[in-house]
Image (cartoon, rainbow, N blue to C red):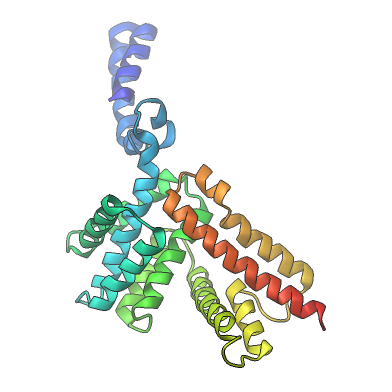
Length: 273
């Protein structure tokens, strides 16, 4: 609506009635093209609506759990394991009762036959101005969900890759995230059980490299650059500035600590050689 009003007023001032008509039509196009991004979704909408700042975080969480529901339904039937995997991520985010119910509703929406995944992901991309680091973080949580259900199921995997395509991510990006997710899980398990039963340093070291998504023969300088890149992608101040929900920021911060732990283990191992 604001586009039509402003367009008509400016057009009237410039060329009276004919200008107002042209301005109104241009304003109509502007509202159609950018309206959802302006009103309650972010962008310049923060100047027009008091609740607009809540729009972007809400979009991220809604899109995330709806996408999880969509992936879960891809194989035909949503299992108890799918639901438990989604609940684990809700707990990881430490969602309050209200947001948990909203996340559950989003998950159910994603399961429905008429759910439009592409449209929702386009909205997410618009809200975050097509930032690739946000796309990767979103995909990181999808990979985490899939790894907790059945990553070997072909339909589940195809659905996960479809999300990546809608976010303009390459298959290699997804494969790297999958390997890193597995590596972090292995490194965490190795770190926790090292004091309880013998775990060779070599096994733990290999898991640390996988957790960072690099090969063991990477140079010290390249390793440092890659580590800093990962830390920037998960830095809480940066994520808050980009409008992500506090719950997602907290989870990303935890992942940053896991990255740091793996990097420090590699550094310590290399220093002792």
